[in-house]
Image (cartoon, rainbow, N blue to C red):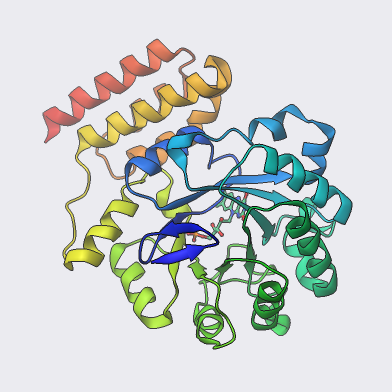
Length: 328
Ligand SMILES: Cc1cc2nc3c(=O)[nH]c(=O)nc-3n(C[C@H](O)[C@H](O)[C@H](O)COP(=O)(O)O)c2cc1C
């Protein structure tokens, strides 16, 4: 069993990666149905939380059925991070995660996200401020380092553990790599196999099949795997990995009905949580992934991204299901 503080997770837990504009409650709900063990909110700006920005506050919405769940924050200012952690603490997630991995310029240039990888003493200060502000377990998600010449994750992991961080998720890329190239897990494996490291180490980057998940588990010895992009429009990745790990056999892919029904539930939850206008708008980015690989869906995809009422969209999805079932 893997433990983060008092949180008990399955052996070799599967984590849903925090993803901006993706990892919201509707998306998390469909991933939870498929057996994900630990989920995170998308990152939330510490400054936004303090300013009481509605958008940041809304991201704090978590539900009991989602537990265990972590809320992820980011920022470059010690005081703001401490205050933000206090605000997050009042909403009682299971843990608070700090983002030191976001490579986006507007985050990095404020010394937040992966920007902090250039200044480890400041990273330590920010982390201490968060640890001080809450009794909840604090975890960190980060990258290998800033660039090819400064991959400092081994030192970073030890220092974070020493100041009370209780788990570390490592994306096997540098900031400079952004999302390009292939994630390199060798350093993640080295961190995990460092005898000084006692906290759970979760590997992240490019896991998109059950075979790869199990191969990387065995090769690098990580405590669990965090999955991001492969779960978008395909939450079944979690159950498929679990099944393969247990039996050595691949599950058949979800049926067309299952795919369209899940898309429908995701849409319905999106509208319930965000209201019809925003719920419909923000669901548009998911249709292509849900329909990926299905034959003759172009016309339906167009209709879905242009539809503007829940009833209309449900009708289109029903029609699509009928068409697909006839093709089978
Ligand atoms: C659309 C998108 C949004 C993301 N937003 C966040 C975020 O809010 N916080 C974070 O720590 N990482 C974020 N990431 C990075 C992912 O959590 C993950 O580290 C990365 O996608 C690599 O994992 P994967 O290959 O399984 O997708 C984001 C990635 C994507 C694709």
